[in-house]
Image 1 (spheres, one colour):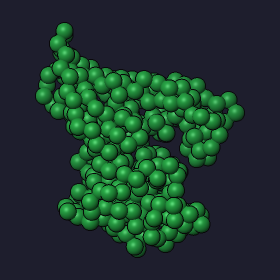
Image 2 (tube, one colour; image 1 turned 180 degrees about the horizontal axis):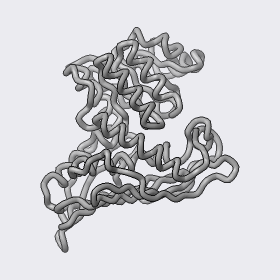
Image 3 (cartoon, one colour; image 1 turned 180 degrees about the vertical axis):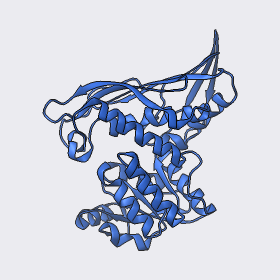
Length: 329
């Protein structure tokens, strides 16, 4: 088993969750934590028994891999810095805020010959494998579309989620989940990703800032239609429906909890319903393993989240947000 010492860049709740997920995983541990405020990093390290702490560049030489868990607007720059320091990188979603920034990160990874993986955690779980297998089997016929959403009610109307300067809003915080799933389903179904586009978008914006708080979009390409939804001021259904010519695939919960992956899918053909229970895993540990595997094999991409999916998702999220008006960065 490959041993991997990690640096976590960021000290927020998601950094805490990642650290907890790696605790006890054989061969992996968090060696260092970093922040724009070294004092905050030191406090985090002391709380969690992490040996090294400092500013971002201070910790890169002491580790084997990096997890970027900072605010969205810093993801691309920190990923490039880590790659140029010779470290493979797992980047919390979104990898970057637009196609150009995404390409800059991927170019740095290609130049370094190192993997970079966008951490849409559901992608690395048995649940996603079950969706792929159900499509690949041909049991629902040619795939025609998808319906999915992700929304929650934020406890306050302040902080990162409601700050346009930090790329807050529904699209960039949770819209990437259904959008990236639409990209995956399109690829699994043979739909050319370059053809996917935002055909329609609508939503509610915060009047004072123009920030998107609830929104829908329709993605289309070559007979494939995905209707997706995101919100940060309303809890939405977490269901996923993949529609085919001869049947459909349903999941009551497509995303799982913060750490635990989704549990089941149903394949429906007429009156027949086949329920497929899938193993539950810690999704954060799974995404960490998704970086370890290509790093150990000398590859630059994770099979479950290839770079073309990240490129396409970034392009669609940027187009979705732009179609709503206002500003988010």
